[in-house]
Amino acid sequence: MPFKRYVEIGRVALVNYGKEYGRLVVIVDVIDQNRALVDAPDMVRTQMNFKRLSLTDIKIDIKRIPKKKTLIQAMQEADVQGKWEKSSWGRKLIVQKKRASLNDFDRFKLMLAKIKRGGLIRQELVKLKKESAS
Amino acid sequence: MAPKNSKVSRNPNLIPGIGKYSRSQMYHKKGLWAIKAKNGGQFPHHEKKAKPETTSEKPPNFYPADDVKKPLVNKRKPKPTKLRTSITPGTVLIILTGRFKGKRVVFLKQLPSGLLLITGPFKINGVPLRRVNQSYVIATSTKVDISGVDVNKLDDKYFGKKAEKKKKKGEGEFFEAEKEDKNVLPQEKKDDQKLVDASLIQSIEAVPDLKAYLAARFSLKSGMKPHELVF
Image 1 (tube, rainbow over the protein chains, first blue to last red):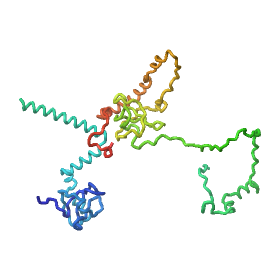
Image 2 (image 1 turned 90 degrees about the vertical axis):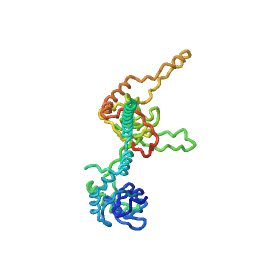
Image 3 (image 1 turned 90 degrees about the horizontal axis):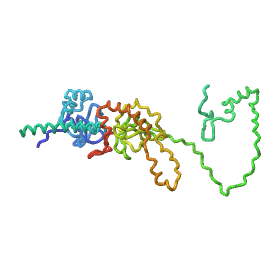
Image 4 (image 1 turned 30 degrees about the vertical axis):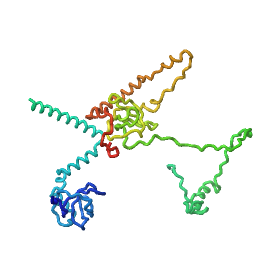
């Protein structure tokens, strides 16, 4: 019931609208009730409305508006990218991106792999059924 | 000295029709004084070439009532259609219309008429050496190695319809003569197909699953959005 992810300095968020869609950013300052100052290693520090941000579970330890170098170092130490790619949310996004970039040939190979996997599963199932029946 | 391609005027236009330099300034710029000096104070003068005697023309005996306009001269030479950059020799294409719709096919070259020359290969999916229009084709990003294939002898004339022999209509032979010419593919075309496909099939079998890919037809399934698909 209580909130778990808070807007705070160092909170990592995902941009969910606009030009920077899909980028991971860190909240480095709060401007007012609606806006935050966000920064990312490969981005110019900008203001963003909270409505454009989806908060993640990841938080890093920084002071208010750190220098770019400090920010990058803090992100490396906390291993933000690694934590993100291991989290289920991050993994889902990676899979979505991969699926969208599949070639026609890749989709064909995927179909073959799915059929093969289904066949193996069915074989195992039949084996297990026989064992449980006997 | 190498000949200068463009004739640039030495007298730049201030406004169209008015040059920067006066007549006497241009005389000096063009070096007409040097030409005169070379020719001993006079401008070089060539005698007119004697024109050969032409017989006097008869006045025409028919004047058309209305002035008929002559059509303007047209020097346009048609070029083959611009080939999409995604289509290169060896690209796998998806045919969208005709009896081979949905078939995945290998692109060989663009013919001078602009049409694309493709082959199945025939053994894999039943598509022979054929011409196809670029507009009815989706280019995938899958490429096949086409280096061992020689397509120099294939051009538009090879695929054109054969000129029909004129048949004399004899009364009694009418119904029998109709059944004569069945469209049998000449053996040399079958041999050409085999020749082109031989090295192609080898390079296709080198890639896993590519043969099955070319044998299968493409279709849109549920949830596939063509404008979002990457081909």
